[in-house]
Length: 320
Ligand code: CUA
Image (cartoon, rainbow, N blue to C red):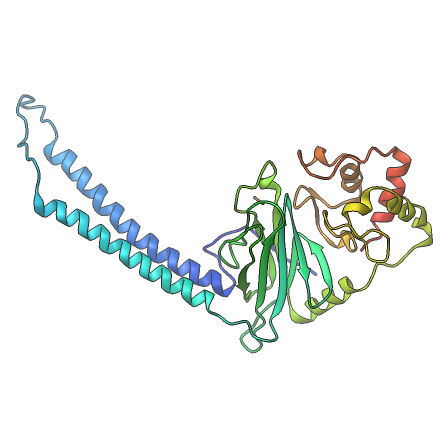
C-alpha cells in the first residue's frame, strides 16, 4: 500500500473535529489580526504625528493626563471581545464533546508510557504500539473512531493535528476523543505535554486505510506469527532472557506489559516511538543498547554477545 506521510498542520484538516478547530482558528486569527492592525496603526500614527520635530526640537507636544472615555473604551471593548471568543469556543467544544458513540464505531484505547504509546483494540483483540490504523470514513458509510486515552506514569498529551485537537493522557483518569478521517493517508502526531527526557521522541502516526485494506490489516494482526524451525534458537533465547518480563509475543512465554507488544513488531515502521527506522540493522543496535538511539529509554542494554544478538534479531524479524 502506498501512503503519503503528511506534515502535521492544523490548517490542513482531514477529520471532523479538526475541521472545526481550523474554522475556529481562522475566526480567532481574524479578530486578533484586526486588533493588531488597529493598535499598531495608532502607534505608528502617534509616532509620526507627535514625534519631536527637527525644526524646533524644544517644543513639547500637549501633555494630556487621563481620559475617562478612552479608558472606558479600552476596558469594555476588550472585555466584549473576550466574551465573544469564549462563547464561540465553548460552542465548538460543546458540539464536539456531545457526539454520542454510534454502535458500530471503531474503539481504540491509547495508553501513554514514558516514552511510547500502547495502542489497544479491545473488541478486536489487537495490541500494538505507536502506529494507529483506522478505516477512512465516507459520507455513505461513516466510520468514526472513538479513542479512550489513559496514562500509566505521568501526564502525556495525544495530538494528531490533522485529525483532532489535543487530549491529555492523565494517570488514573480516562479521557475520550474521537476522529473521523475523510481522506486516506498517514498522519503524524506527537506527545504534546512535556513528560520527561524523551518527550520529543514520543511520536505516533495514524494510518487511515480504505475499508477493505483496514480489514486486511486487522486480520493480519489477529493471527499469531508463524513459527519457523530456522529461528527456534532465537525464540528460545528470547524466552530465556529478561525480554519476556516487559514484552509480549503471542504464543510464547513472553507476556510482559511494561514495554511494547512485539507480536507484530516488524509491521511497524519505527523503533522507540520514532527514534529509528525499524530495519534489522537498527533493531540489532537497539537491542544491544537502546540509549544509542534514545538516551534514558527505560529498556536496558541487554549485554548480549554478537552471536546472541544475531540469533535474537533473526527471530525478531520473523514477527511480521
Ligand atoms: Cu509523553 Cu511528552
